[in-house]
Amino acid sequence: MKRINVFRSVILLLFTFELFTLGLGNAISVSWNGTTWALLSEENGSYYLTTVVPDGHLSKVPLHLNGTPCGLAWNGSEWLIETFVPDSVVVQTLNGSVLFGIHSYDCRGFAYLNGTYYVPISESARMGDCSLFQVSSNGSVEKTIPCGSIDGAGIKAVEGRLYFINCTRVYVYSNGAFKRVLQLDNCAEDFDILNGKILLCSNGLIEHSKNGTKEITDSCDAISCNGRECLIASNGTLYIYDGNLSTLEIEEKARNINPKTVAVGVFLVFLTIWLLMRRKSA
Image (cartoon, rainbow, N blue to C red):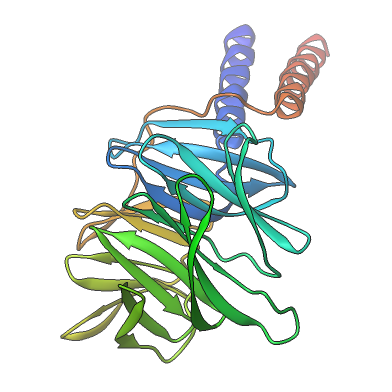
């Protein structure tokens, strides 16, 4: 009977360790590529990309990048990450191959639409002005448009349209011009569009529609919608929102776990076995 109890304790510890290694960390950005979401996150100074399919299967890989990640987008063939290095932003592949870089004192994410990258940057450290750079697929700058202040700036491609947020205002961008579609009371950290409703990550997830506003969650770190539903990252938990909020049912554990984490887990397993055996002999 004691051997059975030892076996059960070890299995329980392994299961707990497996859940621990799944940790999604601090969400930086979420994006959709047509079939899969990708979550860019930070854990204890390391960065990871976790792909998430709507049925809850996850695959997590560590990233080795030049700079600090701040944006994520799909360019039609691969995931790209924007990072900040002193006085510039760099758009690169998952293996660190650089596509292009732009002089900037801030990093606010980027979007890709119809063969063009859209990158809000700040060319002045003191003034904090925002310029929206349009960059071709070969990395050359095609156009720059003033976009107010870099503080609170963000951009997303949604169903063939480009949306830009500047702290308390949401715009549609087209042909070099911004058209305001929403005035906000507070700055938002992230946003997306679902069925004509604007969803804002600020102190929580707030849904804006013609009928008013509705709080969906009391916290929100990042959001990405696919036209039918949204993936929401909040305090290390993933949610699905399609008009109703539900926790994402996770079907598959993360892969490519940090070797240090594995070593700690193995040590804990053997320590537990040793303690239980000592207790048995006593």
